[in-house]
Length: 237
Image (cartoon, rainbow, N blue to C red; front, side, top):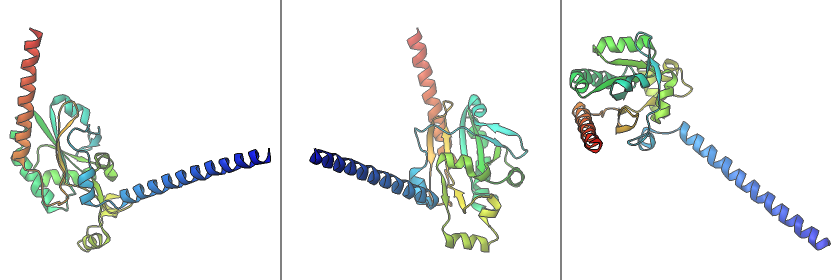
């Protein structure tokens, strides 16, 4: 009887130790994941962000005039080109927005609209829109909440952050975030079903999706839609 009680006690102790070990491992893994999220670099994020085949997170953001723009409403009208930029202070971003504006009529001709998104408030967005004379929506994404849903937010290393501060760019203060976070200069194309069909995810902010590549992808999407419609009509007949 004593041996049986002792054996049961040893089994219970072993089970408790196993459960404790598993719990400790889970906590350690969660801590590592959290730490990685906090310190994710542009290189890491460019490989883990939402990409082709994923569903685009829905959003409701304010435009340069404070009007709410919903992704669901935009997709009802056609395909969508979603462009994330770093801010009005970034010369590469301003040049790219101008480049998109130069090609906006060709993009619209492919049954698509453009939205440009940054963390900056509507006043800054208005400044960006006016300075670059863009005709498409420039949206404000407070605290990078939408960008985080896309998985494209990374944290500047301390040296780069200090260098930016030397230029008068204090990201934490300007963007009202806990850490010096920025989005990848990502470009997505999303079809009317909300599916991502093209994703430009480059860790180097000086590199951007070429307008010609965007137009070509939209053209292929439209050609595919037309083919599907023909097949549907034949099947219906």
